[in-house]
Length: 528
Image 1 (cartoon, rainbow, N blue to C red):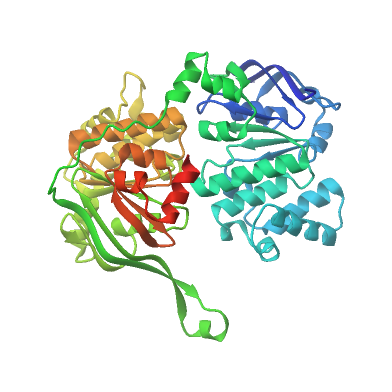
Image 2: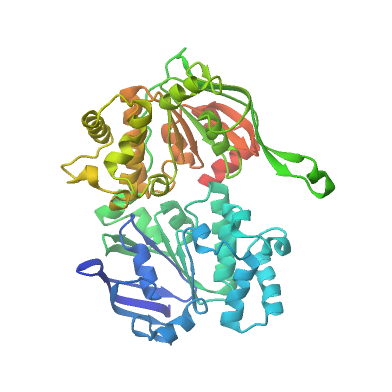
C-alpha cells in the first residue's frame, strides 16, 4: 500500500535526555495505525513532533508526508499550512483544548475561515453541518453553546468536528476516549470509524487502551521507553505477541483478589430514600419567582458492609459522583444517610469526626494534589486538622509509614518527602493520594474513578494496592466507576445507576452474570 506518512529514525531529545530513540513506522492511505504503550513511552511526543508542536525539543530523523516533503525539515510557514488542513489532531482532554470564551460554533468556524477561506456566514453554516455530522443533537443550538455547557462526549464530538473541518488526509487522535464512559466511548469509536471511511483518511491513534486498539486499528506499533519493540497486524500481534513488554501489556488486566464477604457484617455506610436535588432556573416569567429542580439522585437505597466494596456503575450524568458527594457529607440531601452509625449534619463535632473516618481518592491525582505542597505537606495535611496534638516529628513518622503502606520509600525516591507531585508518574501520584487518605486511618474510602486516568499496568498496580489494603485494614470501599473490568476485580456488591435512579442492584454475580435490566445489558455489551 502507498505510504501516506513514512517516519524513519525519529529521535526526540530535551537537552541531553533523549526520550524517543530512532523509531520507524509508516501509515498507508486510509489505514488506521495505533501507537501503544504506557505513560512516558513516547507516544504523544512522537505524534506532536511530526507537526512541530513540542516546544524546547530537538527532533531529528525524517517524516515524509505524501508529496509535500519532510515534515521534520519544513520551514514553520509551510508546516503551519499543513496543520489542521492536511494533518489534524484530536487532543486527549477537550475541556483544556477548547477555548472556554468562544462558542463551539465559533471555534469550528474559525478553522474554516482560516484554512478554507470561507466567509463568516458560510463558515457558520458549515460548522452547524459538521456538528450534525458528528451526531450532536440540536446542532444549531449546540453551535451557540460554550464548552462547559456540553457533556464530555459532546465536547469530544465537537473536537472531532473541528479536526475534520478541512477533510484532512491524516488524523492524529491522542487518547480520544480515555475520559469517557463505556457507552460514550463506543459511540465515539463508531463515529471515528464511520468518518474515517466516509472521508478516506488515515488515522494515527495514540492510546494505552488495548481493547480500543483491538476494535479500531489495522496495525499496531508498541512503544517502550521511546523504542518501537514490536509492530504488525493487530490480529497477529494480539494473538501471538513476540516481545515480553507486549505480552505484559496484554496480560495487564484487573485481577480479582478480594476477601470473601462475611455474613452479618456490620454496616459501614447506608442510605434509605436518598434524594439529591439541584436548583435550576425556570424559563419565562416563572423563573422570576422560583427555581425549578433537577433530581440528580432519586430514592436511592444502598448498604455497604464493613470490609467490603460496593461498586457504583453508570454513564456520565447518571448520579454516581453526586451519590459519592452525599456520602462524604459534601452535598445537601433528603432522606436517611448514615455513616458508621452517625447521620451527617447532626452537629459540627459529629461531622468532623465522620470526616476523619470517611476519606476520598479522586479520579485525577494531578488536579487533586496541590502542586505547591511537598509530599510531606500533602500527605500530612489532614493531621493538622484531625490530630493537632501530634508534633512535627510525629507527623513525619506517620507520613513515612503511610507512604510505605502504598509502596513509596526513600530507597526508590531519594528526598521523597521534599518532592512535588509533578516529579512522579500518574500511578505514583495516585499512590500519594491514597497515602493522604490512609494517614487518618479511616474506615471507609470513597474511590471516585481511581484508575480511569491511568494506563493498564499502572491501573493494575493501584487495584492490587487497594485490594491489599482492604485485606490488611478491613477497609470499606464505595467504588465509583464506569469501568466494568474494575468492578469485576474489586466489588462484592454492585448498583447500576441511570439518570439518577438505581435500576439494578445485587451481588457481582447477579448483576454482571445475570443482568435483569436492559440498561445493565447495554453497559456490559459496550464494555466487551
